[in-house]
Image 1: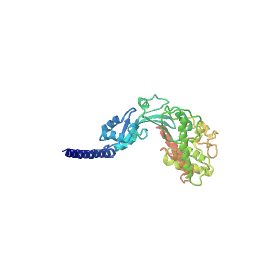
Image 2 (image 1 turned 120 degrees about the vertical axis):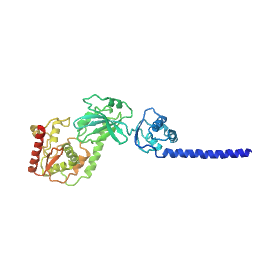
Image 3 (image 1 turned 135 degrees about the horizontal axis):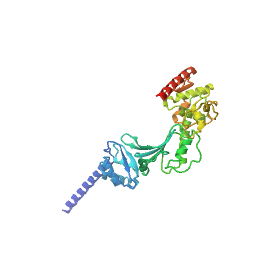
Image 4 (image 1 turned 180 degrees about the vertical axis):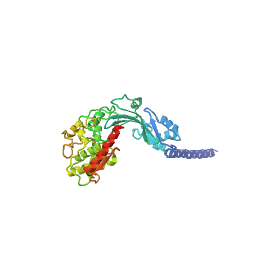
Length: 384
């Protein structure tokens, strides 16, 4: 009898072990299997939160099938104590294991709210924007001029949240003085910038920053990025250019940057200046005259006078021969590449065509006709 009972007990134990093993195996499969999420979501993990709260949120969002399995899986993988605060983009179909990795990997937010300090050619703005997980596009929530406007409520609210991300964005064609001036007023940065960086040495781009980052360190990142761009472009330059050094390429690129806002025109504009340099003609470009008046410190805000076109400054290409002594702005990658790989044309003139672009010409006669058309357009606009 006792043998029979013992035999049954052993059998039940074995069955139980197999069942338990099956449950564990099923749970493991569930943990790594594709999840039920149909669309990407932005999962916000509050500071001081825990895995239990996060699992409930994921269940409510329809991102996981079982909060219990999620919690057990994180615990088994020793990830429970690694939970980070922030806003995290969870892709569609993400498994529980993938979600656990996303919210414990590094702690940097990958979605949610972003405050962007934009340094533009004519003004600086602060933009508050939110990532739409479904489209992976940012939607603007608020925007203001920090030098003239009171910060809106959205900015004040998001600025106080620990998971808000910050970014500094430089427009192509800003001057180094403008960059330093605005960075001095970016409230999440610290420290001083000892001197204005060399004109043209900063790469226009978007730079993510953290609260407490040093301004000087950000300038160093911008400088390193521009050096890398210029080095690569210089190595890939075409032959026969009237440019002897990377610095001269940077000067020419800055003029191209200021002369056109149409991306498709950059190489054509570059060809005009290259042709003029090859023929010994003066560049005669208005942006260099403006830089001679402002030296990059702010915007002129009006048209040039005839006396200013004739005034002698180191940058006035109506007066000096060849290139000016320094860049006149910080050019972007496309303008640097255009300066070192221009279109092959015979153009030596260009003037605005009324569409935002330019009309190019090979002869003075063609150019004068283009100028007359532009003046007619201007007169019509003024009368309207």
